[in-house]
Length: 326
Image (cartoon, rainbow, N blue to C red):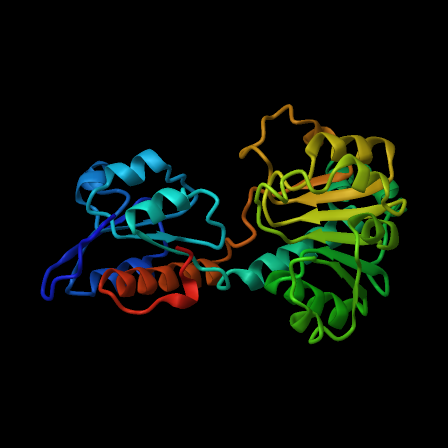
């Protein structure tokens, strides 16, 4: 166990293991209780020996590193997912683990809608035709679809999914369905205008668009399987902005090449970055973005300032239950 307790007047050292928004760095440096070591400082390599807290973004923090960092009391994760942190190793040491589950929700929801629109209107293919002299062919709009009054299904119906659904309902009058066996009945009761679907195959069979909005866990890895994809309504458009590995990528490639999936857009992959010869990347009805759903200017500032504040509070024994993972 890590039995260290905050000592009044004692300065603590926070290591920023990756770059974060400058406003958050300024916020930490303005705290007279803190010594802040940024990602570009030569001292960064000493974090295992000197860090009382670390803030990480897009990096793995494995058990060996956590156990080696004897002074470490707080781990702040820039973003919602904590699958990059060995939570059990942190618990063994009594280290507080924090994340920022809500600050990037709007930007991820907007990307989900963007990918649906881009896939439905074949934007990437149309852009290629314009660049290569295929203007006349592009104007035919072959295979293009509307979102308007079509049915969208959500695999997982948490905060981001609900924000996405609100955009789609308000802008396109879409009918909304969702599959989420983990969502309590009390929450379902508040979801007016949403059809609760009891199985994944029923969701895929009854929807024109499906958005995946789940964390990656052993239970959800490979959840969108060949069997689920085979049940899809012909021409269904699939979007995943949550975590790689939830969608079976070889199965999706086959379903895009031979049906029934009409198009797909993914911001996440099982292995990131994907290899250049990944089978999905060669398909004309597939769109990829580089795991940047939360990477808007506004979101990056919100996330960074939030995790900076929460990390400092936890480091000095103040309550942080709202964002506490462990």
